[in-house]
Amino acid sequence: MVTVNLVASLIDSRALGRLLDSLPLLPNLTCLYIYFPTFHLDRFFQIITSSSLRRTLNELLVAGGVDMFSSIQQYCAHESPFDNLTKLTLELCGVDGPQLEASLALEPFLQFLAPTLQSLKVTSMTFTLDLSPLFNALSKPGSAVLFSNLMSLSLYLPFNTSFRAFPQSLRHFLRTNNHLQHLQLDMTIPLPYPVDEEPLGAWLAGLVNDDVYFPSLQTLDIYPSNTQTGLSAFLSFIKLTVPTLTSLTVSGLWLNPGMANQVINALTECEGQPKMLKSLTLKLIELSVPFLELVARKLPHLKKLTLSQDQLVGSGQVCHSFNLSTQPN
View 1 (tube, one colour):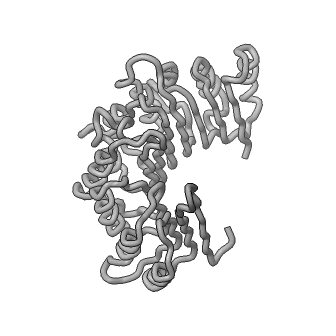
View 2 (view 1 turned 45 degrees about the horizontal axis):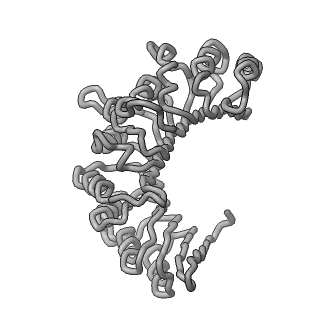
View 3 (view 1 turned 45 degrees about the vertical axis):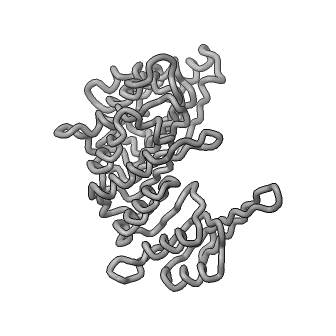
């Protein structure tokens, strides 16, 4: 496997042009990481689509402003620019000017990757970019885009701003592509930007109430919001996925003892039988022997347990992590 990392923003235009022209000299190139190629993305695609890279590239990472994708629509007008791309990572920034429809620049690109894509990761830490028009366009009734081979979806973004116009568009996308095996939904707001998380909790409740079912889901990494609505929906969601779930991570939320116990019970309350969960990662306000006894009794097949405990010591805050495993990392 050959991987190339290009940070376009750190290379002057002439040197970057020479580097781009030399890419076809790497016939075994399978992974390409491109950072901030705002004014050069069309050049990348021109070279890729006219060389063997079209066939050999399996993994692509593009980081930069979402508006740069408007320059490559000619390469996606009739067919996919890649024959065998299976893994795509998008690290998106905001753009200047109107934001509402900016994400639609990605639609032709994603639509033509749909038949081959197996893993999609979207990261956005901007508070101005609304991705809901994109997901809405990909999920229109009667013309929804099916990512038939998509096994893994990872979203790391602020929910309130990323799904401002059409908050249910993500739910519709997940309903169309419910054959996922791996799902990461980390849609919190990083401090120091605390906001009302009720919309995220209500969205998760809608996902459960609308019977969006994932029959093949194996790993789940989720932030359920800090609201009672979201936490209740999260417990219901766990019960729906227990028959197939092998790994659960609750990200970004410190669980009190009662909530932690409810999570363990939810992982076992399907037909009264303990399931085959192998890995569990939780953050706890309080770690106790009774909790560990509950885990041991309810989840006897567990092979890896990662617990973080948050404590206040004087005026400071200390986090202790415990990693228990029957297998080496």
